[in-house]
Length: 217
Image 1 (spheres, rainbow, N blue to C red):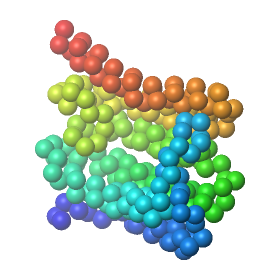
Image 2 (image 1 turned 90 degrees about the horizontal axis):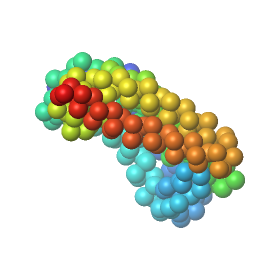
Image 3 (image 1 turned 30 degrees about the vertical axis):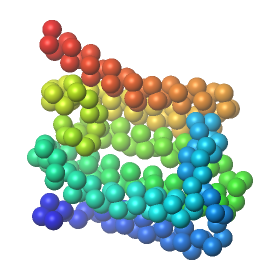
């Protein structure tokens, strides 16, 4: 408990979590038995879960998990490095909470009115998460729970630093592509989302390997 320091981000996390859960529970009786659990890259619903499972999962990820991240860092073998990026870590926790709270509200709203373009809103929410996290990513120092964790970044603080500086830009670009793709025709939207996933997943991985190889040359 001594590592837990309550900040304004924690207050916002609680407020958003309680409001989104309250919205879901107030409307529980009006909801269909099944709610969307996964959207395809085209914005269509791929998978449905029971409404109770959706509310429990989204509520946990939007309220409990971001607060628990305060304690997770205390078991990290590199826990001292969290002191080097306290603001970035707090804002990333808040961004995760906001994403899942928004998804819970979106799922419930879709259950109440299926004419809502839930897939587009989900894409926008995910894109904004990438943009926010990308903005803070260069501040993250090497650890085992947060950031681009590859064999090369974990082995070298310098590779970690360079990878996260590069990845921050890539995540912001990828997030912007996802947000823009939400408002484009389906064929273009899918292409932009695929490009965004390559940018935020494949390029950082490849970059960490490349600069690690160069550093050993």
